[in-house]
Length: 426
Image 1: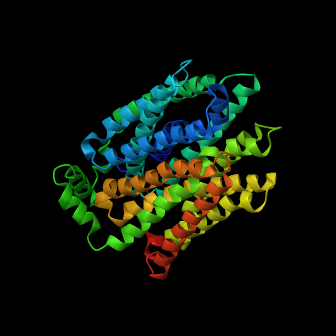
Image 2: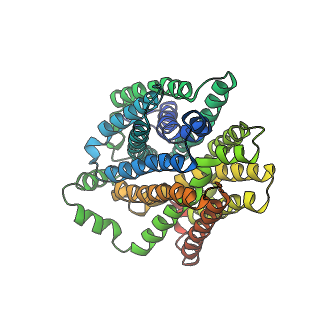
Image 3: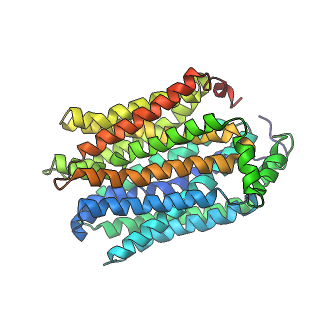
């Protein structure tokens, strides 16, 4: 691709992709999944029951739900400012959890606010990066952005393992995470000065539909009914199946994504930190698999790729139930890492391409459904775990949700809806 005077060089594009990656490390990797890594120590230090731990997780997912809902109605001209606020809030909430003797009400409040920041950051940063690289025909770089989720998970495991190895405390982990997160805010302010948010859409040679996209997005607040009607026009069944399937995927993955270290500590009480090593494996698999699935979907179609990943994740949830062995938990972690981040990346890309001029609406709607699934997942898991804390029941229910999601994707593929998008990045 030749650069116009107003377009960034290849090196600068990679830099933007890396900053997008870092934003997800902070907002999702730390803002959501550091809680998973530190949860066993949090439960031990604060003497929390499984039920309370589940409600704390759901408080974060409830915040994510609210953040996703708010992001759907952010006009394009305010997206960058709200993103700055959300990333700053992610850093602030991480640092707040380092405060000693924080009361339980404080935990609920901070985890909720961290969820709001995560939901806003996920949608606004992803929409910006996806649009940017779509306009410059560099879709492969957009997959690098989503690797930030896996990198954040891996870093959360490394931080927790390192601190606890030296008899540290979960508060130290959150303090270090907050300090590591600080540069991302500065880098986004630099990016705003170097490449103002609308600069990537100023050249008609890059994408002649750009002005229409901005105009339609800017009108979401002014006439939401009209814009929602246009976004769904002629595509109601397609959007319903993709969004509902994506929501069930959120429900299906969250049991392991929230309680994996806790469940493994129950399985091997003599080695309570083994769950963190598997959690590290989850992050590594997620980090390196997401770009691969994006490239493979370019060949076989997004719906086909999503169907494969969803079935693999469903099988992974059942492995510890079918085989009460350590290797089964490792397989659960590997399949979780290989699938969930790729499903997020591909689902949001697919929703964006259904109606590009209403990307914020559809990406926001999908994230809303996903966050609702996440919100319900821990609540259902701890509710059916019983007094004995049997997580296997939650894993079974999670797998059922994933198989239903796969059936929806199978229906789309049978209807031929998954063929055209194999070429959508050309």
